[in-house]
Image 1 (cartoon, helix red, strand yellow):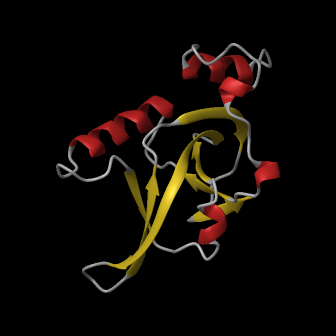
Image 2 (image 1 turned 180 degrees about the vertical axis):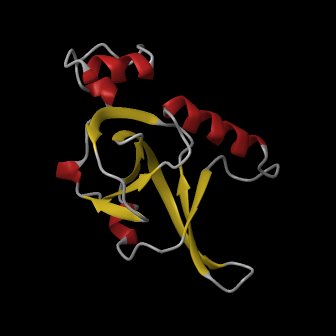
Length: 144
């Protein structure tokens, strides 16, 4: 059973911001390199094998778990200043999920499969084509 990670998406106002940032990073990657989004974090997950068994990185944006990216690799490394870091290799596709409130925290957290929100497209609600800002507003009014 896959394990997931949960992380704050600092500086993003919405899923579209994250997708734009990923597009920009992919455009700057060296020719011939894999089409992966790389996110660098300070700590290396100790449960890497479970994470790579179909796990995803769930992003918290503006106080909600909003979307996820599939984890495809974990690469610990030491940066130029001798500090241990970790590259989380992610599929560049961002998948919106059923939004769920989540408080701010530092670093990342493990997320058990039973606690992970469903993909928005699988929720049975026809809201995936709706702009994210509209979905947030309708949720805040209790209409979604």
